[in-house]
Amino acid sequence: MAEIWQSEPMRDFAEQVRQSAGMSSADEASRVARATLTTLAEAVSAGQVDELAEGLPEELRNELSQRSGQARSLNKLEFLDRVSGEIATTDLETTEDQVRAVLTTLRQWAPAGETSDTVEQLPGPIAGLFQ
Image (cartoon, rainbow, N blue to C red; front, side):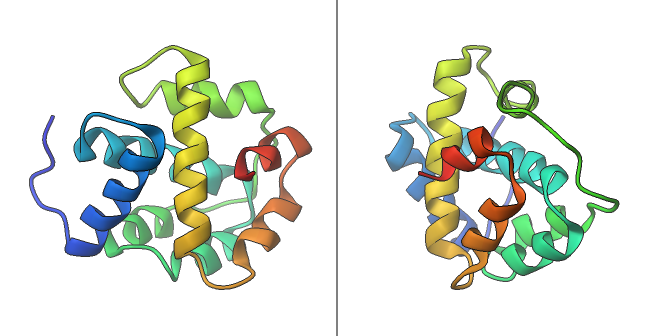
């Protein structure tokens, strides 16, 4: 499924993810980014989501701003399973590599210090995906 419209920042974000994960298309990278960030938004406080979203492309900010409620406790397997349910792979090793690529890209785009604040809210195994 091709993206109908993406802003230049979203294309840039997706391209960074694509290159980092060795994916074949920016559309695939965009789907992985959306799935990863939506799942991440479930695992941290709404305030932290708002802080992270400030540095992201508008499309991702809009999706994350729709999240409400308290953080859910997820373990690493649940986190990866949620992401894989939204993308084209069921291989958790591939999903983990792609999630790491998204989180590496997020670290570059998020306002200074916000990824550290996010990592502090996550269980160790999920926080380790930021490495």
